[in-house]
Length: 525
Image 1 (spheres, helix red, strand yellow):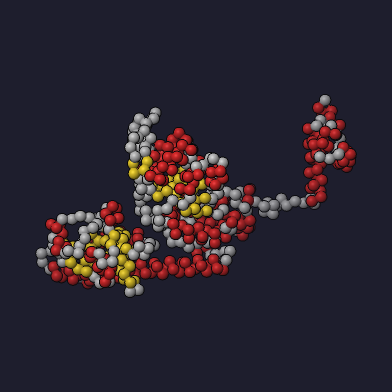
Image 2 (cartoon, rainbow, N blue to C red):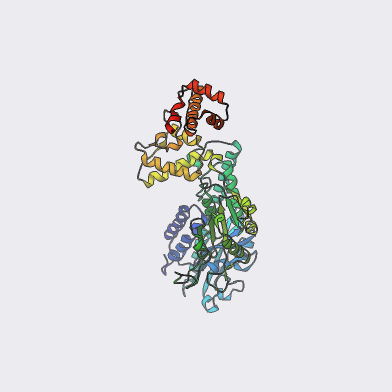
């Protein structure tokens, strides 16, 4: 299609169909733009394809995807109303066609400096992305026109790009409606306070790895959505196994740094002797074994996100250096003598109560306030019981596939055990239990007896108590008296003092239970 001959109507329709299929393959519009622009270049011969989308919070058009531009050049590409060719299309909602860019004074050349010689004979097209009568972005591309059939090529390019822009705008509109519908359904679930939901509705948030429909977790997700677009430092708190790392990943996924590095480190998993080197890097010869210069996690996460898990485990010395990084936005490698500027969005997590750690002098107060800019608390699983069945179903699918098994359901007794258990280990414990059960299952069903003993009840194991409460207490009282008599070598007075009763009371109980106290005295003699 990128040959010298102008494509006919059939070829053009086939190309537009491929464009529509490309958009349909991706859940998010953003991820579909790169392959779409590649199609424009490879199949249609239109180079430097670029899509800008409106950033509603600032009212500025920002380059969402562009062929031939580096990440730095994309960052520079921002356009206000009426600014340059793109800003003009944004303002008027009308397409702009430039036969020769070298003669166009409105062309800003902002996203990559090019000489007039490079621009000579280069046609540029820019079309608005219209949704509901409003401009939500632009689609632009370029072609170096051949010596002949220039007018025909320009006419074909305009017709094609107008159709592609319409397809992109319709796709964006459809995705917006889907998000609105998901939000409406979520609001209905919250308002109705439903305790159970169909398994098919578990993916409430498109693309998210967080599986939940409980009210408490929906509040967490709302906080994630609010803080993700910013560069604010986030402190995630909660018990072990609640999913703090998933929250950090979701913040990064929804942030403007999503296509940048996401680096994570568990502060509790590394010895104190190397944690400083891991975070800040080291120079060659800085210490024994430092045979070469090494970048730390802060440098590796430059322009991206760094997740520090179990930050409460950091030593006071490292806390001081971390505070300096947050204040100055620069680091020094171990053994280094000059600062290195870093642009890192920091997310920290801990299962400790840092307020108490600060009061006890174990954690720096100034660092705590630097980290606690935007706190998010992840509730334990026992406080979101409605998520248990949802998560169990997800883990069954995951480990059935991993182990090559077909498991169709979880039995009712097993579900009863799962929902009645208090889950001290939270989601991590639930995942481990389901993995074990999936391995043990032989009939495509997870039964209650596949679950660990810690989850079993007296009813599920046929170990319900048969004695009355009075009989059970009497048995316990007798055992306790015998144990104390053994300790005191049959000394009734000493045994009475240990049990907090009188000698007369212990004498009566020994007689009542038929205990031969002399046996224990003679055994020690």
